[in-house]
Length: 102
Image 1: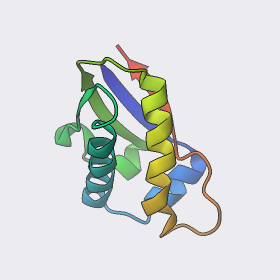
Image 2 (image 1 turned 45 degrees about the vertical axis):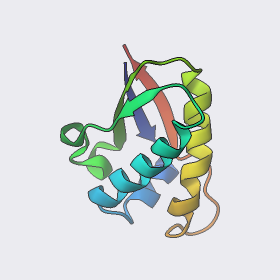
Image 3 (image 1 turned 90 degrees about the horizontal axis):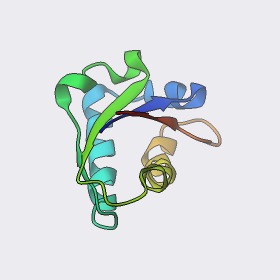
């Protein structure tokens, strides 16, 4: 299952403060932490995430899904705000919206 994390308008503004490699590292780190709590395998395909800021989307591939995907990504959305806030001005709301692509 492919999932696109489409950045909100505020999310797009914040991710402009990061380069592509930083975003992949941040998301990968937080995803790996959450997969210890949730039964799902997630791959971050480097070739699909070459231009995260320009695309306005972060792409992941899920397999062996044995949890609620919406709950997983809601928690990721809350957790990911921590490192992103460090370079944001003001309060940070929802960073991305989930788009499941079968």
